[in-house]
Image (cartoon, rainbow, N blue to C red; front, side, top):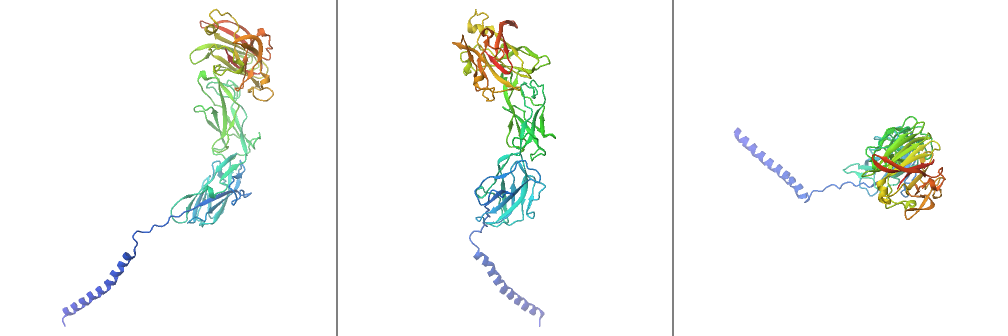
Length: 516
C-alpha cells in the first residue's frame, strides 16, 4: 500500500467533514439578521416626581397630609438646636426609585453640628447648609423621614427649603416639586433683635459720625438683645455667618459707606469711623443709619434716629461756641452769610445753607417776598436751657432789587422754620408726644400782599416736621423766651459789599432754619 494513497484518502475525508459542520454554523449566523428590528430600541429615561414635608419635630407641624402652610421654628436657637423632620416622598407617578437626595437649608439656618442626623445609616450632614441622603431605594409611593437639628438666626419669614433627588439607576437629576411639598417655607419667631444704644447726631461733611454733634462724642453702637423688645444683651451668639457681625449702612446710600463689625463680649458692635460726604450746596442733608445682622443673623434692618450732614460744625468749649460770618453758598455765588453764638449750655452747633422751594412754600410763608438769596439752617445740642443768637447777613443788592434802590434800613419779611428739640433730639412737629402738634407752633407775624399787616399768626406744622411762619421783630413785643424774634438789624460791610444784618434770638428747644 502506497503511503501517498492513504494520505490522499484521509484528506478527502477531512474536507467532507468540514463542509458538513460549516453549513449549520452559516445558517445560525443568519438568524440574528432575520430577527433584528428596523431601528434599535432606546431605554425609557427614569422619571421621579417627589416632594418634601418640613416639620417642627417637636410638634410635627404642619401635617404632611394637610394644606401647605409654613413650618415654624424658634429664632436664635443654639445647641442642641431646633429639631427638624423632613419627609421625602416619592410620588406614585414616578417610574424609578430614589437612590440619593440632597436637602438644602435656607439661608439663615444651619445644621447643628452637635446632633447626628437620623437614620444615620442613610443620612449625613454635608457642611452647614446641606443634608445628604444616600444608599436608599425609596420606591414610588413610599417615603423616608430624616431628622436633624438646626441653629437659627434671630428671625425670618418665608425661608425656602429645597431638595434634589437622583434615581437608583439611570441618569437624571430631579428637584422637589412645590405642589407635592408641605412646609417647605419656614418662619422664625423673633429670638433676638438689634438696637442702637448710641444714636448718630449732626455732623460736618466727611467728619466722624458720633453720638454727640461735631464729632465730639463716642462711637455709634449697636447691641444684639434678646427677644423682640428686650434691652438685655444675648448670652450666646445665634447662628449668623461672620461670628455675629453687624453691618451698618446709610440711607440714602453713599459710596463706600457700608461697614461690618463683630460684636464684643457685651454683644455690642462699635462703629467709630463712619463718615459721609455730600456737596456743600446739598447741605443740610438728612440721613438715617440702618443696622443689619451680617449674612443671616437677622432678616430685618433696624433704623437709627435721623441726623444731618452739615457744612459747618463746631464743638462748644466750657464758655460756649460761635461761628463768625460763615458763607452760605448756593450753586452760583454767595449772597448771604451767618454768624452763630451759643452759651455754656451748648455741646455743639452746626450751620448749613438752606433755600426754600419757590413753587412749594410752607403754608405759614405763602405771602413772603422772595429775595433770591440763600437761607440758613442751624442745629445744636444743648444740655440745658439756653438761648442761641443768629445773625443773618443779606446782600443789599438783592434787597434793592425787590424793594427799590432807595430802600432804607426797614425790617423785611423772613420765613422761618423751627423743630422742637427734646433731650437733644429734634422731633417732627407731627409727633404726638406732648411737644409736637399744630397747636404748639411758635408765634410770628402775619402778611397781606407780602407786607406786614400788624397782626400775628402761629407757625404752621408742615410735612417736613418744621413749624413754618414769618418771624417777628422786637417791636411786636412778643415773648422772646418762647418764640424766635429779630432783636436788631443794621448795615454791615463784608468783603467790600453792603449787607443787611438781622440778629435773631432763638430760645431753648428749637432747631432752626429759614431766610427771605
